[in-house]
Amino acid sequence: MKRTSSASGFPWHSLLLVAVLVLAGCAGSNPLVGTTGRSGVAGFWSGFWHGLICPIAFLISLFNHAFSIYEVHNNGNWYNAGFILGAGAWGILRGGSRSRPQPARVQ
Image (cartoon, rainbow, N blue to C red; front, side, top):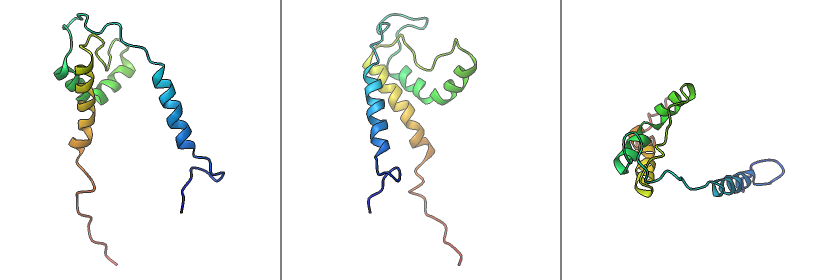
C-alpha cells in the first residue's frame, strides 16, 4: 500500500524538500573565512566543540543577540566538517533506542 501525505495523493514532503534545497542554494559564501577573529581562526576541533554545544548555544542566542552558534572566523571546510560531526554526535551520545531490548508485554 502506497502512503501519501494527504488525501489528495500529492507528495507534500517532496515539495518541501525541493523548497529547502532551492533556498539552501541561495546562501552565499562566508566573506570572513580565513580572517582572524578575537580568538584567531577556528579550525576542525573548534568546529567540533561548537557542534557539540550548539543546542545550548542556540538557547543562549535566543536571549543574547551578541552570542552566535557558528564561528564566522573559521578556516572553511575543516571547521564545517568538525561542526557537522559535533552536531551529529548528539545522536551517538543519546544512544540508539533500537539497540535496547523492549520489555516483554504482559497480557
